Image (cartoon, rainbow, N blue to C red):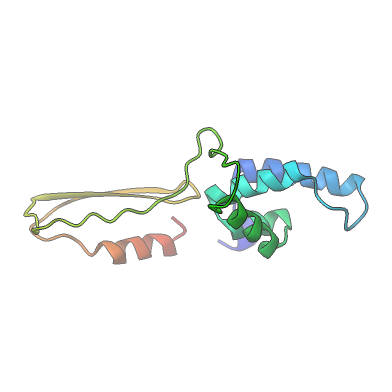
Length: 140
């Protein structure tokens, strides 16, 4: 699938329409209102800077800087994530002693909404990093 046919998540598409409307009614190089930037930052938290900057035609480094400022520990008024949105996280769990299990279950979920669940019944665990890599390569 080429980049042009990739679906844009609806929240990004909504902001894209707002930006198009703003740009059509203001002179070129007019600064974007802060609420539009804030909406872009919130979307970048969930979808990533590139996934938001590219379809919205925003300056990548400008959006990244604003996102970094949003997460800065010196920020005076921390804002919670938008309702229903959580920042993606990674947690590695390491057992003190290797567990001997007959069944393994792992779930992957991408920021684009793709999901994969693997249930494995075997004496040895599968190569999880290779499975995740292969899933990402397919656009998971």
